Image (tube, rainbow over all chains, first blue to last red; front, side, top):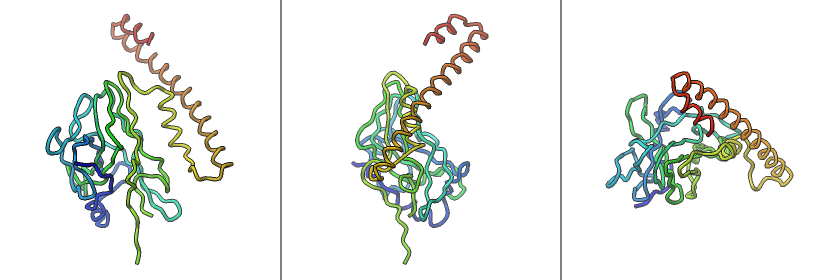
Length: 152
Length: 97
């Protein structure tokens, strides 16, 4: 049981096939939260939800299974590095949630609908909890050195 | 051969900010916002790094001020909407928050 931060291998393959579009307003990506009991990593190919075993998705007030929509930042480049990210922060308001990591997935892979293809597994470095408050995930600055998705 | 690196470090690359029984304050949101506008590496030349950090502090205080103003302004709008809907007592409570 572990959440290992990684860019999913299946995503890398799909990226080379041109199946993910991060342009603002293009594909809808989502972020789902998981407890420390979840098993996620580079080999995760799809989002699988539900509180408790076997998927251990987070649950509680202010959170619905599947997580929340992300807003794409259109990819750009600086020097020889291409990068993209999502609008930040992503906030689950008035929530009571505990999570140790997250999975970003694409709901429109290759132009489809209701897809669940994994993109990135994020580890928060331990359990984080909100109690009738905000649970905000802040992405790094959108630049060639820090952006969450970079090809360099 | 061409290779493109897309690997992630094992240390957390996102930060999580949570609150208990309240939302984020304007100062907390301004801090998050300023960090997106101005970022500088710890290994940058000290003169540049210090100047960037001073600038970020200034941006943060300006953002916090205008966020507070925006909240006050929005609360005025909300109070008037509630009063117009026939709940003057509730409007008064919200105005006092």
